[in-house]
Image 1 (cartoon, one colour):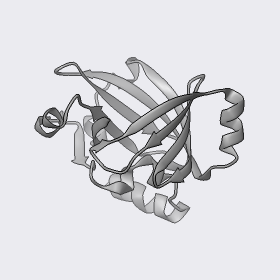
Image 2 (image 1 turned 180 degrees about the vertical axis):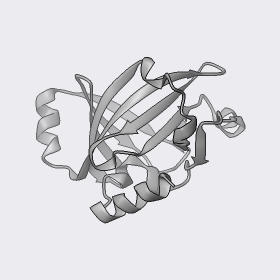
Image 3 (image 1 turned 90 degrees about the horizontal axis):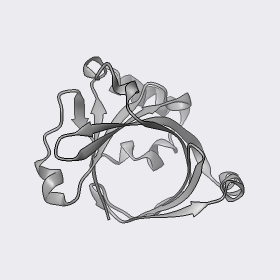
Length: 163
């Protein structure tokens, strides 16, 4: 079970040194989006992920893929391939902030996710001041839905989050 909250970022308050923390280059695409069946390239690792329905709490299962299987499945995906850098910033109470800086079509979008051991901890979490609006329950910001946006919808979304 994955328990996480997701937030937009206040760019002007983003820590100056975020890029000094460990990071991964991610590329991901979606075979289906309901339920989610995703393939991901994480640096040089390849993963198939199933995610069940839900927002803050949802089932998640991951399975390793070979590079060859990833490339074959990539041709079966729909929508935009999501490209982002994920920085892992330490947070209080042994939590980690996963800061996603999107590239290519979604350049300019920044989201932070924090995973929790239980729903009580998630509900009690007080985010740092550089976090913006909590979009945990806004399906627009699920990567699976971002991958389905048209160029005009992407322009509109980026305009909204950058204002």
